[in-house]
Amino acid sequence: MEKINVGLIGFGNVGSGVVKILRERKSLLSGKIGLEINIKKVCDKDLARKRNVGLDKTLFTRDAKEIIYDPAIDIVVELIGGIHPAKEFITEALKNGKNIVTANKALLAEHGKELFALARDKGKNIYFEASVGAGIPIIKSLREGLVANKFSSIFGIVNGTSNYVLSSMSGNNCSFAEALKEAKIKGFAEKDPTLDIEGIDSAHKLILLAYLCFGKFPGLQEIFIEGISRISLIDINYAKDLGFEIKLLAIAKRESSELELRVHPTLVPRAHLLSSVNSIFNAIYVSSDLAGNLLFYGPGAGQLCAASAVVSDIVDLTHDIKAGLFRPTLNVIPDDSIKKFRKIDEIESKYYIRFSALDKPGVLAKISGVLAKYSISIATVTQKERHKQSIVPIMMIIHEAKEKDLHEALKAIDRLDVIKEKSVAIRIEET
Image (cartoon, rainbow, N blue to C red; front, side, top):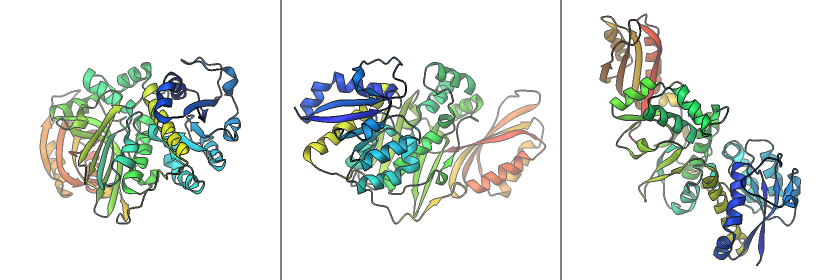
């Protein structure tokens, strides 16, 4: 049987999962595509580390050039992550006539426009299903299954670490620090989880989703990013009392000729499907004009679910190579009716706000007076029992207000002598 040769750069968790699937499902895949997918070479810096899959030692190398410049290799799979040297490896591989499969969302978010253009020029493709949602087939669904649709919004829980932390706080009544520590012990959080909990990983994924849905390739600077590190157990529990769950959402919304892109903690009504997405699971809620509202759901992390998406990309490319076709998979048409990216100050939203104030007469009147000055209307007010000394938390739900006005109002309120801690504001989305 004719072979398609694959070179793998990166033999870590996902890389070893890819090898495991290609070996254990070899006959299944060959039967479905009529070709044998052959692992010709595997590159990794650490070849001594134990993996859950064995390979002939002659297949290993520490030099990626042995894969990039091997004329017999048809597909290069990059799974090392990061920007450098992954960018250089993919660039050289494309120039040497290789098709690419990658899970590298950070690289594609920052340099995808350049790399996709190079791939088109060379008549090659870059497949990246595992870059968003691990094994959830969201990229292919947007690119192919929903090809005739126009989109109005995307709401995504796309980071398993943050979702695990928030779910643990809500379900186990524990602090942010305790939930994060547990996530690290279970292997759901990196030693340095900054990219995850501060929303940067979610923003990288949002860039790719926005490109597929709206034909715009935003820079990271076009996205408002706020992480979950300031979310306290108090906020989690008060939100639940009000009928909400707090989730870190990646949001893309089209508003007339503008596109707003933001990542931040969000109060989601408990009746909405996204509110029940817990642990390391991801979900992407897409609103389209023809297919309606769609929810894509599944584990957002894990060796085999991510490896499953990588293998799917390899199989797609194998079909193309077998047919002798070049199918430009990212034939994205820019939506010229979208004129600009909307700044965070210009958006309007409902808000949950928590003030930490002295327990004395007139405090609520002072807060309400400042809000009224900025034309901000209060929907509900709740004052809980005293927590320490004479300081009490006051929770408000605010009717729709412009972000800029609320920001200015909170700055003024935090300067009041009756306010003892920086106020917390969390946006509410009813999607």
